[in-house]
Image (cartoon, rainbow, N blue to C red; front, side):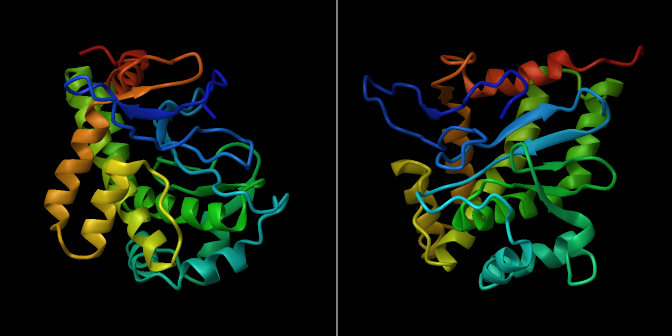
Length: 250
């Protein structure tokens, strides 16, 4: 959930008078509703950025306390998850230190020492999907930290440049977690166009680069459909994060 409590649902803007759904679902602490990738500057951690994706999916019975070991065991049936764990440095020894379950949205703190939080109210499947998404963000934690640092120092000079870089990371997370979901036999719920891109990538009908470019384009033309930010272009949402950052004097 964003700091203002708004729910974020995303779908594409009208293209030639045809409204094409691009639904990542709403970000919320309610475990019966899935969440959307979003970004939030932590108020007490000016050098950190939090990427907050899937909190839950489906209509399974809620888990007030997520069984993290069970979640990881299920997730590791995916080759993509195993690959991302290796890149992120998550293993049997580090898992307990890097991954926890508690209140608030599922997300990754993007500081020098990133950690993952899994929403304590997630469904079993939602916890696994959120973990997969966050592993991708953790793999890119150093990159995200540098983007955030460069934005504050003035090396990144515009909100557009910042939005481009953050959207690249979020696009990668959507693709990687989508592949993991298909490997685990889960249904995709990102909307028809996004689902098709992930399925084509999974079935090797699209290269990763082509799938990335198509998914990035979808994110670039998305609009927020609910909450206090309803009607805003998703790209503008990322730009607003840059504009809200305290900048160091040049």
